[in-house]
Length: 250
Image 1 (cartoon, helix red, strand yellow):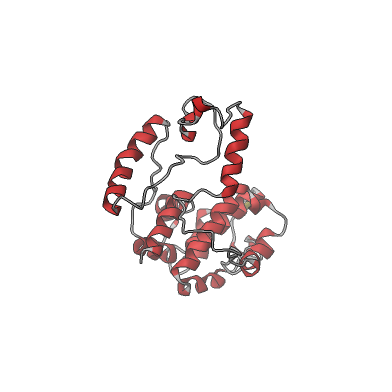
Image 2: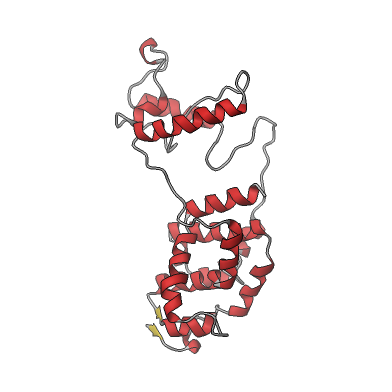
């Protein structure tokens, strides 16, 4: 169905409800981006009731209210990030099982010096680690030395494992990105894009323009050439990682 009139837009969509996003803290805005990235990737937006129940007022309230941050019952955890994660006992268990599956026996002297990640080079994938499993010597090396070594090794590892560097699609700072998110009413725009994907309906640029930008801030040409490309670049894990890193370093 082609949506040519505002009155034909879905009943769940109310542009005024997105105004609260302007007052949200940075980490909440990043959370909203993350939710939409996940739902776009997994196709969750196709679930019955998604737009009426899960997606509401620009916030994913059902998952957010139910979500609690779980702390370990013990203190046997140290800090991690989205790109660097200490090896867990569970990881070791998976590694051992994967090695067994490709007939590599860890007690065999001939394999003890083999690097786990090197098996990827020979097409014998043993993990879903998407990178290099390594140890970092914090006891006898200064931070500057470790960082410089990583800088050199990262290029070598990517070449050896045939992994291209993942680049953020948006080069602006978080401050600039946040301003565009608000000015472009980007969550409202993206949610309508998801709705079109889920239903097969098509909203004309004219309807989008008068609905999202009633003061005439952006026209249909700017939506096509500026706002839609920005939205496509924003709701990616690469951009989300960049945003989260900037926010955490503030």
